[in-house]
Amino acid sequence: MRIIIVDDEMLARGVVREYLSEHADVEIVAECANGFEAVKAITELSPDLVFLDIQMPKLDGFEVAELAGSKTRYIFATAFDQYAIKAFEFHALDYLLKPFSQQRFDQALAHARANLGAGDGAVEKMVREATGRNKPLGRVLIRDGAKVHVINADKIEHVEAQDDYVQIRSEGKSYLKNQRMSELEEQLDGEQFLRIHRSYIVNIAFVDRIEQATKDSYAAVLKDGSKLPISRTGYQKIKTVMQ
Image 1 (cartoon, rainbow, N blue to C red):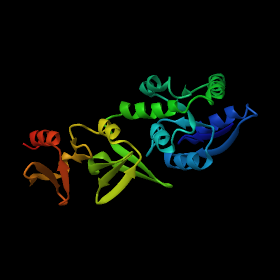
Image 2 (image 1 turned 90 degrees about the vertical axis):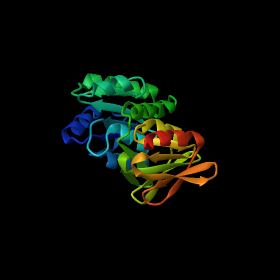
Image 3 (image 1 turned 90 degrees about the horizontal axis):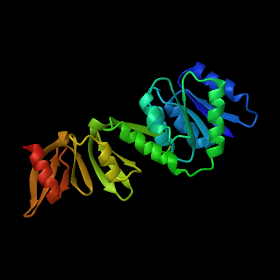
Image 4 (image 1 turned 180 degrees about the vertical axis):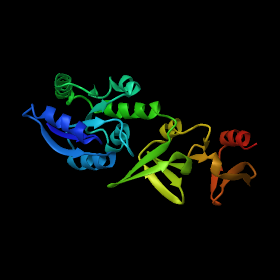
C-alpha cells in the first residue's frame, strides 16, 4: 500500500511515520507539510491512501481532497474539529482524533485496507458535503495543471456556464473550473451573487447599471464595461436588488 502523510506539524508526521513502521506492507511515498505540496504529490504519485490533516494554513484537508480528485482515498486527522468528524465519518475511509494511539491508528489502517476497493463515489460525495458544510464559500479553488489558483469569492465579478465547466472572471482574468453552474451557485453567498441568466451568475457589487438591450431584453453593465444578458426571471430578481 502506497501512502502519503500530510500534516503541517513535523511531530505529527513523525507519529504517523512511526505507527506505519509497524506495518511491513506499506510504503511511504511522500510527506507533505502543507496543502499545496500535498495536491502536487497526490496528483503526481497517485497513492493508495493519504493520511490528511484537516487544519492546515493556506489549504485545509478538505480543499486538498477537492483539488486532488477522487482517485485517492483519505483518512482524515483532526485535533478539535468535532463538526468535521460528524460530517465525514460515513464518507472518509476513517478519521483520527488527535492524539491517537497505535491501536486506534491500526484500526483505521485495517479499515482502509478492507475498503480501498470500494466505489470512488464516496470521496466525491465527501468533498461535496465539505463544500456544503462550509458554505457560503469564502474562496474558490481552481487547479490549472500544476498550479492552484485561490480566488477570494468577493473578487469574483461574474461566472459563465460552459457545458460541465464554469468560467470565473476575477480581477481582469478568466479561470476555467471543472464544476457545474448549479453546484457553484448553491455554494456562493446568495446575498452577494445572483443568477441573472441560465448561463450567468453576477456579483452584485460589480454591477454598474441595468440597461435595455432590445425591446424585450435587458443587460447588466458591469463596472469594467462588460455586458451580461439578463433573462426575464433574472430581470425581476436583479431589479429588486438594485432598487
